[in-house]
Length: 175
Image 1 (cartoon, rainbow, N blue to C red):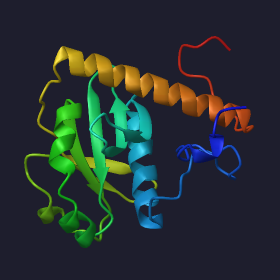
Image 2: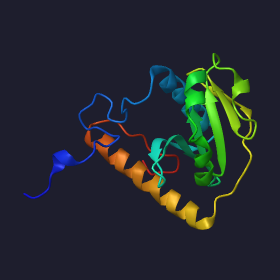
Image 3: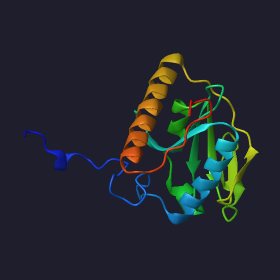
Image 4: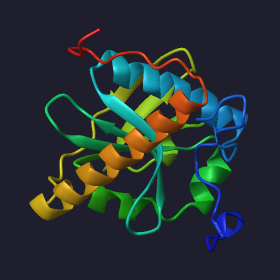
């Protein structure tokens, strides 16, 4: 056997973890914010994928595909310091139609730039306090990103199913 499986980087999905969809990179506070934002986006009818690696090498905290096909990126900030040290977020605009920051009530909303959307989350839910300006993706970028989202989502779904995680049907799927 010629493959060196042990030299391959660990994927975001682990078949042996208690929760194969958690990778342990995020703080507990960030995970609470993420949960509230995910609930909001699902209520809005969006499909949500956490921790998507982009072609630039950056990793988007949350990517949402709205029913109309719009692609949103949500960057989660769990503290003032988290926002201050992160200067990579402007690049995310190249990979979405709308860009949002999300945080919790202990982080002042005033620190976030006005030219991005803003979501406040308490872990149980979230609210969009400022809509994000639209900047439409070019067609080739949209196609490549849609393919990346689909392939990543399918790979994670397969890994979760193989690990015995119950996978609900999507709206409109045959039972």
